[in-house]
Image 1 (cartoon, helix red, strand yellow):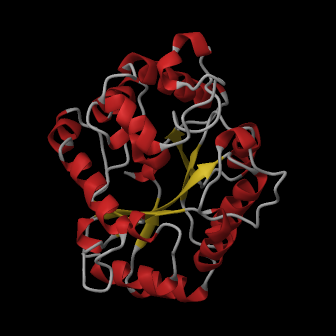
Image 2 (image 1 turned 120 degrees about the vertical axis):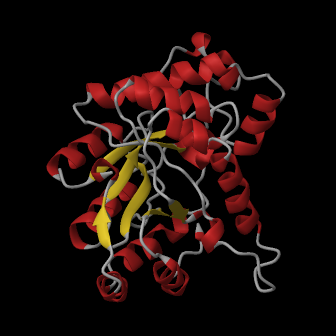
Length: 287
């Protein structure tokens, strides 16, 4: 029997995202979410998570959006002059690979975010990250060590290649190649993950359809599941009001599609397909 984790990213970003995640869990098929400790609606997300103990909650490590939890002077290489993160994965990666960003600064802010979640009373199920920053070479080993250090023991492992095949139809879709690149970064760390006895799923799906999620894109993924454990990443939410979001965190291009993703997670068709395939829904705490 195949096992499937359906995880919503960005828990804590806004009230609309928080409420959408809880609705998708309570009324739909969502089993897991990852919380952003430095976002303004973090405490509200913690309260909701405690009211819904069957929802697995991991940590969405974030040194890209908003303000840090660490004192700015201690992690200055991660910040712009206004004290905010760069709000761009391309800028972050360029500075990291050119050694303008200090790995010790990343480690410190990650630790502060992890400790903030523990201090809230939640027991995190796993670690993942905003824009999959944790998969970058040089950062993934830090996250593996943190998963061990804090007794979390599970990380998001991305291998979307079986479900994101380039075809004539999607040959010029950058998300296909993004999925392959992040999958490559993850597989380069696979031996180290196993050597450290950190658990992970066998395969992953979601990058190639982020911002354009629709039912007919998910059903082929379910059909290809053949034993093993998988993660499906999504971004549900209610319609966002301008006042809901954190202006310091920048814009999410997926804001407009969050309600559509929520609708799919609530759909009878998706529930029926999962039942027909006899897929067992779990969260990372069940690994």
